Amino acid sequence: MEDTIYSEERFPSGLLLLALAVALLVAIASLVWSYTLSHQLARAEAQLQASEQESLRQATELAATDRQLRATSEEFGDKLGITQRQIEDRAQEILHQQQAATSQLARQEAETRKQVGTVSSAVSGVQTDVGGVKTELTNTEQQLQHAVGDLGVQSGLIATNQQQLDYLKHMGDRTYYQFKLLKGQPPQAIATVKLQLHKADAKHSRYTLEVFSDDKKIEKKDRSLDEPVQFYSGKQPLLYEVVIDSIGKNEVEGYLSTPKNAPQPTTVP
Image (spheres, helix red, strand yellow):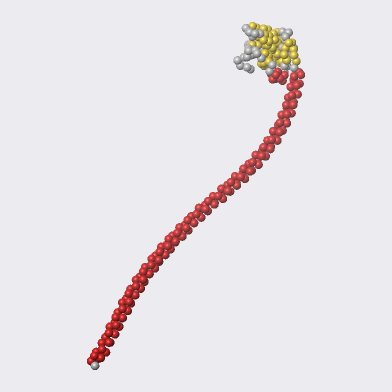
């Protein structure tokens, strides 16, 4: 009887211990689980905070980038606007220059056409004049005559006026020196000789003069108008001719004709 009672009394004690052990294990497990959850929660919160900070940093950088882009865009827009205005102004300036150049070119073309017309008229006039000159030269040549000089030597062509003398000069066969002599004046140098007038009779177209050549004096007395007055001059004597084609009161005018190979004066009149 005593043993049975003892056994019944010990059984609740073992169960209690078991219950306590189980409760202890559950408590320990709960603590471990609670610690684990707490640790995970702290890590998750740290990650969330880091993620929020990263998001904030990215948002800040994005905002700064956006502001920079806006500023750059505005600056570029301003610069582009200035450039565009400059291009438009330059285009207008070029347009005005082209219009001015076109107007000037039109004026120049009109002036050129006018000048061409004037030149054409002038050329026509010149052609007419040339034709007239040719006719005059032909007439002048026909009027020129050969004559025998006062020495009995056949003379060349004799000019009786300025037009005929110009024609002879143009031919170039001889050299011609024009002069005017006054009565009472000392001898006048003509080419390489000297001439002095002693008498001029306009009424009868006669005159008298002296020729100074090679240290000699030659008198040509009572000669007539347009008569070749001849004399020789030079170391190798060459035929010189004096022709008086105008006689006035106490004066005469004419020319001295010398061969091309005759000595030339220092100053040609």
